[in-house]
Length: 146
Image (cartoon, rainbow, N blue to C red; front, side, top):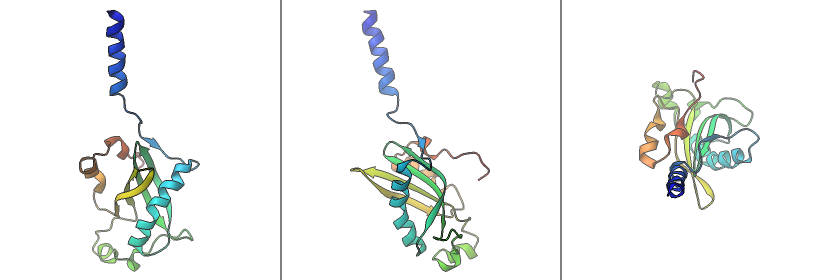
């Protein structure tokens, strides 16, 4: 009887543990290119130009990915938002820098952009947990003054 009870406890512990925990995607991880290449077309359309990204956070958990990035021109220069459709927001003080937060989802083996925000003045991704059912641990940002 003790063996059955012990097996039941182990089974419950395994069932309660997540299949995958959030993990940061490093520079050498091949997943980095996959995720950034999935994100790039949507951001390039939004900003109207070819881009590269400076990555602050790139994290994956299960079939979800979160990115905290800054767009740059192919030469590495900051984007001139005055030449984008965000110019009015910038003039009105409603564009808080060049940070872009993005949420991606893997479906049928392919990563797609679910949502992204450019230069938000608040924590724009805070509602994504409830709206999309994304694990909250995906959005943990480093405490680096950003």
